[in-house]
Every structure is written in structure tokens, then in C-alpha cells.
Length: 169
Length: 169
Image (cartoon, rainbow over all chains, first blue to last red; front, side):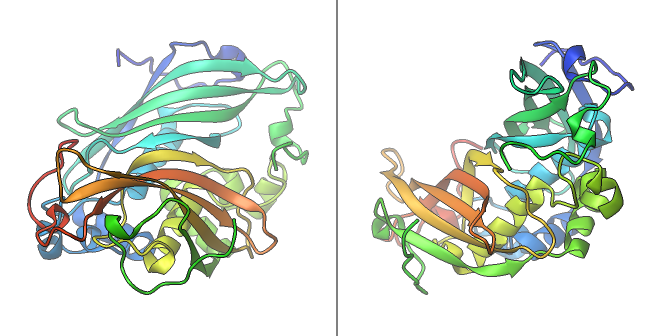
């Protein structure tokens, strides 16, 4: 992806255009982080133990794909995707073209690929964001396309901040 | 989905047929778990604080979607998806039709939807699994379709246990 636009302001649906890009800060992943996440959520040999992992298809310790997804989310919440009202994902696609390994320094590059104001709810819309999580060598360890619920600037009482419920819930 | 087949054996590509179903054990999600995951990976108000969450679109504390994904993975690793060689996901689709909330007791129901032996690597293939994560009321909190790398039984030196690397890495 091309150069991102650094920004500190929080963006509403009205501010987002197809093609707008963002770049997150970085996070260094180490073996203790990989093993801690795996112990809680994905206790498989290739995520828990270097020796056992060396005899698997991964040829060494690798992070759970869901750990890579979680680190990606943290990088986006910490400024990598400055959406007003927070990052509320409805779903999308995820792929792990390469594994995250100990010592990898990850960052996320994101691009707006669709902006759709709601026809029934004038206070909101959906924004589809395509993101790549890259390591220090530029290898893509995760690729996602996620649809987000985003408030409109023009509505002072955005439903994202009221007790109204979403239709989909 | 219909009744699952409980099984304790680990299944190879050769054992899996389209339509085969699996059902995991259960996991109870509470507020401390939700806040701990969010503090590490998704520190947004609706995942961290009941009071702040009550004023958002969720009308109360909810788990990060990636937390629901991580709990789903744990339930599948703990017998919900007994694949030989482990659960190695290449990617797929994820949706969160409803949020996971404190007190929810989750389980996962999975179904094999595609089995494709590799044409170039006789020791493996891919299996696509569609899963639903449900709470105690039967609400679907996550729906995934994930492509998995699965070894063949007929190959004693399955590459999942050697140091060979995948083409896609």
C-alpha cells in the first residue's frame, strides 16, 4: 500500500473516502507473548514449545493466527484506525499468508474500500476497510477485509452513544 | 445445525466427509475475562467498563469480537474439532451477528463443507469448516468459514510433522 496519512482526529463516516489510508504504530511480538496467548486460547504444540514446533509444518514457534488478529486490533485501536465511536466490526474476511514468529515487529496498513451511509438510519453507515499486517521484512502475516459500523458527524446524538440497539443484534 | 457426532479419535483428511458435524464443550465468559482480553488487545469503552458501555450501541459490556474468536478456537482445540496434526487455519470468513456478554455460556457447532486433497502434495489437503458459536439461548455470536490444512492418514511422514515448509509461506 502507498503512504498513509497520519492523523490524530477521530473520523466520522462523512470524513472517510474510498482510498484513504492509515498506518499504525508497531508492536514487537516475542515468544512469551506467543505462549501466553496460546496457553489461554490456542494450546497447540506449534504455539507453545520451540522444540515441538520445530517438528511441525511451521519449523519453529509461531503465533496463533487469532493472536496475530488480536495484535492487529490493538494496533488499530491505538491510532491505526481513528474511527469516531470506536472500531465496531460486523465481520469480514481474514487470511494468514505467513506466520508471526518471535521477534517479529508488526504494523498495520489500512485502506478504506467502501463507504455506505445507512438508508434507514441517518446517524450511521458502514465502512469497509482492507488491512494488511506486516512484519519488519515486509511479509504480510495477516490480510483482512472488515465491515465497520461508523457514526455520521452530522448527527449529534449518534446511536453509537445511545442505548439504542442495532438491528442485527 | 443438527446433532453432532462426539468422537475422541483424531481425524485425517481421509476420515472427513462433507456434512460431518462436531460439537464442542462449553465455556462460560464473565466480565473479568472480557476486560482482561480487552485490556491487552481491544481497549475500547464497550469492552472495559460497564458504565461507559451502557451508553454505547451495545447498551452494556460486550466481549471483543476477537475475544469471541479466541474462545471459539479454544473450544475447537479442546475437542470441538479433532483434526490430526492440529487446527492449522489458512484463513476464512468471520461474522459476529450478536455480541458475547458477561454470563454467556458458549459452545461451537461445526460442519465440514469441503474436502480437497492436494494435487501437488499427496500427504495433505484442505478442509473447509463452517462453525457457529452459540450462547446458552441459542443466539449465534460468531459464524466462521475457515479453510484448514489437514494431513492424510495414508502418509506416515506427513509434512505437518516434518520441517518442510508450506508453499504459501
